[in-house]
Length: 409
Image 1 (cartoon, rainbow, N blue to C red):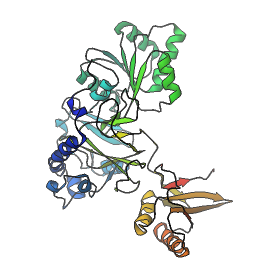
Image 2 (image 1 turned 135 degrees about the vertical axis):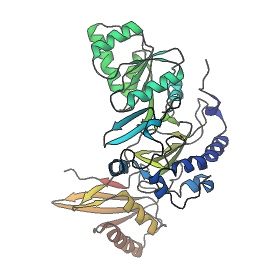
Image 3 (image 1 turned 30 degrees about the vertical axis):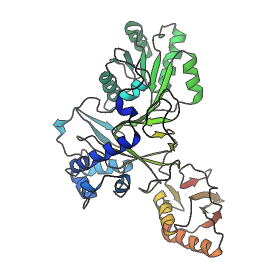
Image 4 (image 1 turned 60 degrees about the vertical axis):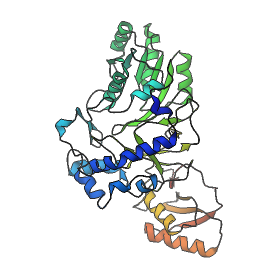
């Protein structure tokens, strides 16, 4: 049995990097045909964006901005150049955010993730993601069919009918949330229904803790995780190595300091930013709001693309202090004004009826003048008073948090 979907997965990392960035200028030109990108990227020479350093100088587009953009210039906020009729399906997600489906094969890039999870051409797959208006069901449906599988478009819920489908079609694969897989298995056991044909699963959309992973294994199901969004499709996926997740092909992933577009050091936790090379619907530095960190080296499974630890929390740590919003971007601005500092963390607590802010700053210096300067900068940037605590370099957690709200009520 072939271990990899194609040769792209095992090419030399430098070869992949060169190929991705050789394609990026043309993708940028296509993006610039959309009015919102033309405005955001004004003055950018696509031919010059051929490295990670050059890409990092482009502005970040935050997913949190999309609902307002889509409302102001429906349906896609001026970020899509093609006419609506050039797409296959048109979806919506909460926000609302509107998503078009490109028409080429495997538009959501999910076939690789299914292959890594053990799915093969000719398999029958029970797909329990929702098919109603949101892209989830169609992402996994299109991916499985691109791999050569037959798909049962079951959607979520209605366990009794699911049992009939499983007993009739005998699917070997499952795609859906891990929670619903457990619900199905438990309900089948209680009702005496036979769902034993399901031997492997690709799950997404909810937490898949080790306890549930072990339970699936004990019930004869080899289950893997995939990480994606409705905008980009499958971004990264687990492989038989079970060491983090491998980033999908045709994507450029950056990990940046929350609130900025600045790449973090390798291994540091930061926000995921993705540039896609889909010419019909490119995304240029889309910050999706999720935290992760890279893993060093390549996967023992032989895939050579970047590896990430998986989902590690949300990057949007905006909180309200004394009636005013404090954002990660502001903490990043403090760091820019004091480049001699290491990690920064604003800790918000409460004493009686009052909010308290303490900025913890890593530094090799304990000079009183630095503490005074930082106190002034904290007030200037946030418009709020707070304390400054200088701490030893490397003492703050590497978890991507710029703001820690520790108020209990």
